[in-house]
Length: 264
Image (cartoon, rainbow, N blue to C red; front, top):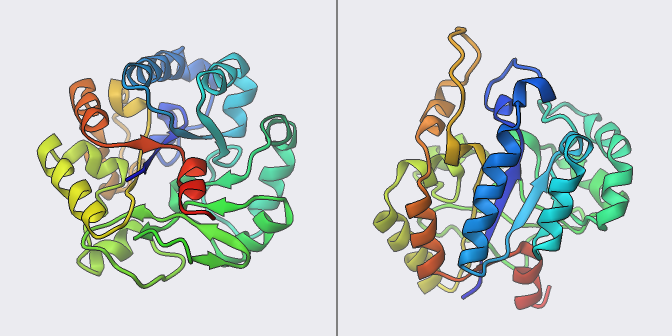
């Protein structure tokens, strides 16, 4: 079964709640981490979906071009990784219009997985085909406001669709959002392997995401109040060994390929 591996391409500053996204703070960190991840994907002949911030395209256009040249799908992650606010998305799309047009982008994931239903109408009007900003189980029939919804995977399988649905919502429903980068970091390889197999056995593909900075770590800032407590486990690094194990034992591709596989 084809599963989807997705990458939220954002600098390490996005981990913190109040640190500005500045290229001087990045200091080459994102490019180094992304190249390391791209090499792992190449080793396993895996293609992934990269949800890219508009500002990252402005900072590192050659990096985004390299990602596309290696056969990966380019999708949109907003412009500045801002908190969700109504009517913000329209401006984010406008700021990134050159980037979106250049790559013919049709997929979206909201920064911090926070989205409003009104945003789906904006996405549809802007020509987007799918969104992946919620948690649950994949179904080819899930379409909201004309936008295909691709949930990040939880276990056990839940065939109902609530939108929006956050990480906390999934946990409150006694579902493990193992497709989240948080749990990809926390859980060991064999547990993740069993969860993927269990979901696939029920005829469902798995959708997972990670951030490049999870492979290299986040610089520590000793400033109180900057991080949501639930995000602290993100500080656990994802080892290259774990990534290679998962990519070797399961079939992963892009969201676009997943939709084509399910004839959507």
